[in-house]
Image 1 (spheres, rainbow, N blue to C red):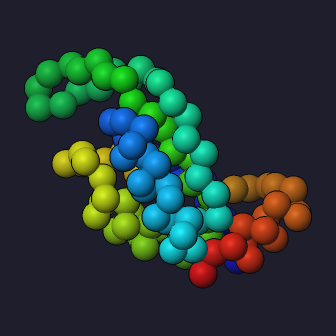
Image 2 (tube, rainbow, N blue to C red; image 1 turned 120 degrees about the horizontal axis):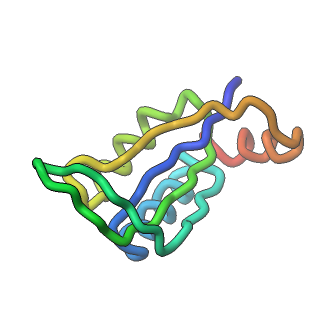
Length: 104
């Protein structure tokens, strides 16, 4: 079994908390950290935009990625939310076991 960290930005803390609370309660993720008040500079519809955002750091199983994406998209306020994953190459065994036990 493999595990991933999913990174997702949101436009405000309320939307981030809704997403985090939902996917943890539904056992799609074991844990979500919300990092507040970041500055993002990005290209969107032929403009360079500077916005304040928050980042969600989502820990889950690799096999749940599509389910997490679907759930985030159903709750997210953005037309095209950033949802990317990184494989967890190494981790504290007991923490990895905990992720496994806390997700479906």
